[in-house]
Image (cartoon, rainbow, N blue to C red; front, side, top):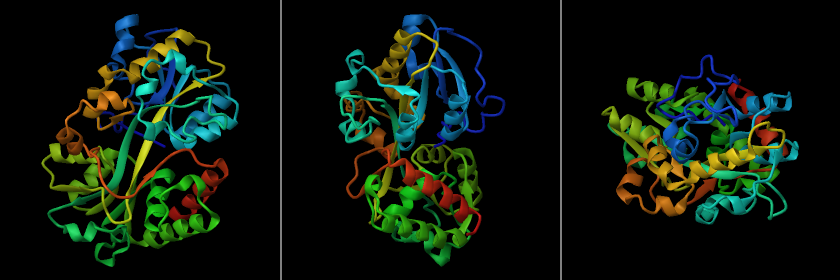
Length: 350
C-alpha cells in the first residue's frame, strides 16, 4: 500500500528509504512520509523531549525488500494486506500487548480474526493505528446520485474516459471483489479471484488513468478530466475545503471498503525496545485522535473515537454506514502475489 497524508502528497522526493535528520538515536521508525508529524505521537515527545528518528519508503514492497537486504529499523508502518508476508519472512517479533495500555480499547473490527498476523492467537504482530474508507468520489454537479448507486458506474459507457481507479493492487481488488459479490477477501476462492480480475479487465478501457496519490486525484477531479473515482475518504474533506462539489458514496448496493494500517516490531532493530513501545503507545493515545482525523484518518482507539461527534466523522467520510463493507484484512500471501501480478498485466492492457 501507499498511504500519503494530504498534507504530504508529493513530498517523497529525496526521502525514500533514507533516514531523516536524527532526532532520537534510540529509535528508528520506517514510515510513510507525513506520519512523522509530532502531533501523531505527542505523548512520545512529551516523554522524550522530541520525536524518534524516521526513515521513509514509497510503498511496502520497497520497505520489505530494504529490510530483507539488511536495512535496520526498529518499528515499521504497514497496511494489513502485507502483514502475512512480513510475518512469514521471519523479520518480525510479536508485540507484548500487556505493555500496550490502549490495547483493550482498540476497535474489535480492526483487531479481529487474523489481523494480528499470526496463526497463534496469543501472538500479535500487527498493531492497528489508522484506518480509512474507500468509496465512490464523484462530481456531484455533473453526476446524478442514482448513477453512483452501483459500482457498475465504473463500467458505464456514459463515463468512458472520465473514471479513475487507484494504482494500488489492494484498493483495486477490494473494489473488484465487491463489484462481483465478494465481501470477504480473506477466503477468496479461485473463482472469486478470476471474477474480480475479469471485472478489472472490463473496466480498464473505460479509465482515464490510474491515480497514484491524493494530490493527483484532486487535480483530476478539479479539472473535470475525471467525474467518478474509487477514492480514499481523505479526498472528501480535501475537495470540500477547496470548494469542489464532491459526493462520496459509501453505500452503493455492492458496498465499500475499509483499509487498515498499523505498526510492526522488527526483530533485528538496534534501538530501544522501551522506546518502541512508547512510540506505538503514543500513536494509540487519545491525544493523537484529532490530529489523525484532521489528516483524514480514523484512529484505531475506539474509545477515543467514540468521543468524536458524528457530524465530524461524516465530514471526513468515516461515519457509520449500513451495507456491505470489505475490510482489507491480511490475506493469503500467495493470493496477494497473484493479484499483484495480474493487476500489472491488466494495467498494461492484458
